[in-house]
Length: 484
Image (cartoon, rainbow, N blue to C red):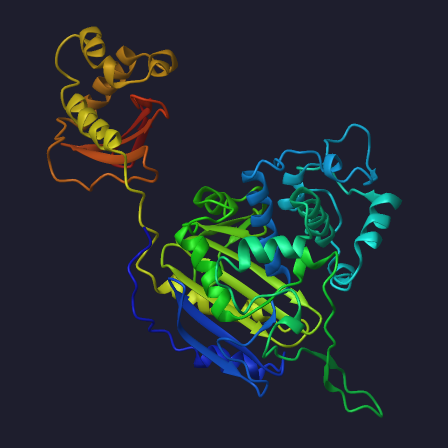
């Protein structure tokens, strides 16, 4: 379940004024949505940006291409572990003989080994399928073994688009429009400006030079072609808010070619990009990965942010959504390299920072709650009776690996020795409630006369869901001793 809707109390004016003052684009817009509905937006400039204005979303298109692949997998037309050459036999790869085979999953996750190609790839959209085939046949060189590292590749998504065409038995653009865009009611979204009304003009900035005034010059837009799968779509903040809500809600419409499970999988990282400190006003670490046409950032203190940026001659765009708050932020600016992602992220970070603490903990399994209660009782009674009899009596709570990993009788012995310093355990006394980091995990504290026990358990993934991990740390003043 997503969190309940709350009134937006963030004024977009200072963000837009600061960004517009940098003169990175003639015009643009930033919008905030909740549950697919726009709750606030603010535009700048004279080019007519509004909530239904169409603009180039560029590489945000990759998330549509990825979902098309998942839909074709669902239809049995391919698997993500298929060798790429099984679908594109003319592809000639230049790579050492001992390297892993290039698979569809590697192209999706930007771990194919193909070199970054933004300046070149951004100018190839109108290339024909024949031209793409000639490039494939001439030889494509890999930088590293597929699956071993991250490297952003537009060519990789052009290859995925060709795979969609061949697996679906119809052109890539027709498949995406008929199976994804139209069923979702995304009426502002298409691959050609000719199919839409109210497309904003894109610009390129010329520097002022002697004899030339410089300034913004209109940027002609490329036509659809073999590279459309990597960045060819036009859309609006209204439609992108609906696209984000599809992923936030993870509920596929009835009759869709994809399922809710596909939407969950689409937002899982497949390839690690790196880890860093979160930018202010956020805090803690953030681990970033690339999934299925989407970037996934897991913030230690603020939950998961899913996003993608798009940059094309004449436009930049950005979309991101934050599941703990249910909020989406979208930005577009009609200038090349106009930093729309920076604007959108500043707004989203303020939203994330203003949320109440860290993301809500997962709802625990009933077996997890029962296991915490049972272990509380067993810890309180650890000092009574024969250790072997106690171990035999409590064995039914634990999975079979627990005894093999560290026998219960030894755990009881370690616990008894710790209680010499800790004193009497008060399992029923006041203490903080357990934390459930995952539905199957719990960590909690039990107070004693002279310290406390810090306990942790994790359940096995198969019925009857017994405890597979049970650890305890004794804390007495400044001393901490791991018991097991």
